[in-house]
Every structure is written in structure tokens, then in C-alpha cells.
Image (cartoon, rainbow, N blue to C red):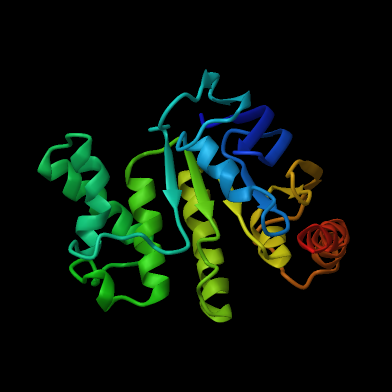
Length: 253
């Protein structure tokens, strides 16, 4: 389960048209990346899918059910970590199951599973300020998975990390995704990241954001970042995205 469908989505903020007739889907268990110039509405799409905001027109469905109000079937991972500073890594991961009313022993079983899965054994009792950026994001990913979502929404989760840690976290995310196989909608500004992670890449136009082009990334996993096939796809996506970045700059003038 976990199929997301966006149909004819328009979104305005006062007189500002952010999204115009957005149509795409995320298949069950699929990893889809959203690329586009700044201000094209990528984060707005995540907020709509999470039910944190509503479209002015159009519909969004998760497993055939229209999303109205907060979508409790999705998990959200932010760039800023958004961890509770007064809770340990274990406490952050257990928060969702506790809110859902899970028994203490079940919460602890869930947290142990995801602590092991994201490679945080030995750090479960550390507070966020005692963890590196990569470790904090591992906690954020584990916390999202602990809620057993049908869909994982990720808003540039590795954008604040250094290049080496970012590459490590991309590989770790794929390892976790291949085990859990939950549908993922992932926002990024990095074409390299999108080609490495995604089954499909959705390129958004400059505002008002709409779907310009969708690329199928039919590369075997694990992927070689510098393979000729990856380079060819990267060049095609960069060409498509580059024209929209130029157009966005003209709009801002």
C-alpha cells in the first residue's frame, strides 16, 4: 500500500498562484524525487500530501482515499531534524507509537528495531545535542518509520549535511527503504541525489509550479554514480531543469 495520486492540483496563497494543474503519482513502494527551481512549490506539494494544507482545486488520494485534513498515514522527515531536544534518540523514536497508545513494551520493541535498522545502537540514550548531523537525521528517519506510515515525505533531509555524510546517508536511506519498502516522495535540489535515489524524477517548472517532465531512472541498484548511464540521465535532467532555473530568475527580476 502507499499509492499517492495528485490530480489537477491548484494552490494559491492570497493572489499568488503557487501550483498550477499538478498531476503525478507515486506507485506503491516507489521512490520518487521532486526537482525544480526555488519557489516552484515542491515543499507545498509535500504539505498538501501530508494534509497540512489544502489545494484550492484538485484532489489528492492515498490508496484511493481522498486526503482531507491531516494525513495520519504519512511520515515527514525535515531538513532541520525537528527532534524534541528534551527526548533521547530512543524517546524521539518512541514518541509516535506512544501517542497512538502503544504499550510500553511494544514502544520499546519498535524503537529497538529502528535503532538497529538506522545504525544507532549505542547512541539510543543520547540527546539530540550530543549527536552529529547525520545521527540526528537517522533519528528523524527512524522516528518517521516507527509510525508505520504508508508514505514517507522527505523535504531535503540531507541538505544541511557535508558532501561525504550526505553520500553516506543516501546509501543508508536506500538500504532502509529496500528493507521497509514504503513509498517515498523526496524533495531535493540535487540532480545527482535524485538520479542516485529515485525510481522516477519529477521535474517542476518555474512558478506557478507544474510538472514539466518525468524521467524514469532505469538503473540497476546499487547504483554507480559515475556510470555512463547515470551521467547521460544527469545531463538530460540538468538540461530540463536548467531552463526552468533561468526562467525562475527572470520572474524574480
